[in-house]
Length: 426
Image 1 (cartoon, rainbow, N blue to C red):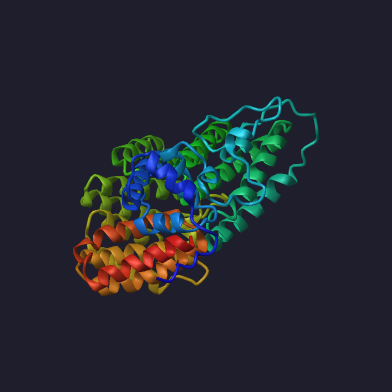
Image 2 (image 1 turned 135 degrees about the vertical axis):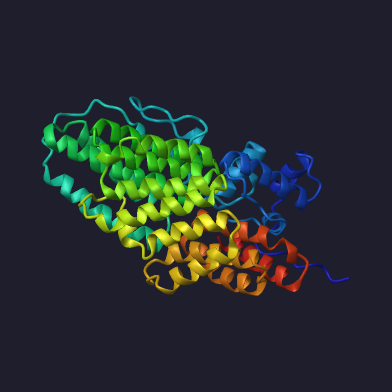
């Protein structure tokens, strides 16, 4: 008998030992257990580690896992991936070894330290002159961050935008008068973007934290438009948590003073309210709310630097309508809208394209067209690898559930291979 040639890097015996100690006698059982722990830790009911991914982790010494995988492993074993046989990146330190300097507030234990550090440093700060032009400077950079997010995805931007928020916060502690008001407004916009980046990366705990920071900054600014925007931000998190009634609660508060809100903010409230209505299965409300937003859309003419997706995204409201239809299982209606939207989407909107393709694929599966679903999924999976968008991967997992009728057929196995390959490369 020919001896088996060891695979490069050797096997991950540490992970195998940890699995056996948990009573998981097979890789399939471990994948199921870690998936369950991850769904709870990430507040993501669709999170999943595939048996194939687990087998790869045990067969070699794997590189550092994706952020959502790392948190799921820690939730399942109470140990960091470095202690489970994964190769930590250079310069990485575990959260419990990173003690804040004197004068800083230590984040809650269940919130990643890197997510909270920029918002939780405390004073005092030295008196200094804060030039009003800095407000304009930060506003101009914000638009560049929005464009970069569409091309890169969240992971390459979180550190940069968080650092700029930290600088804004330090300047704010010394600023006076109108400069102070300007920094509060732009600081809230930066906090909202950090929250969105964490949400897109699949870290709902950090996203929720930063949405809270956004709301605090908005309230301190006293700007009714920004306060409404911050409530929409909170509703976005509730939407990703599939809490339709929570979405509707927040949108009702935001719309209580709608006459004082800029048309753009009212459009945002209405479309988010439509998502909440979709989650509770109210199609009539979805169409009514999207139609109301459509009447307001031509009146959006403000110079506010935040919340401009309705200007940048072609067919913005039809994207919202198609997403709502997909949530309600209206595959034929959603698929027709996605074909229209994707036909006119610019090449620069790569991340959005991946999300829309995954949603269109699910619509195709819903109307029993598995071949089209898998064809669309191939491109979406490639974009998910390039951008690191957990939101896109979540959409692909929804597709996998819609494709269950073909699980044992060649087309179903083809989809499983596409998604497993994307997981391994992600």
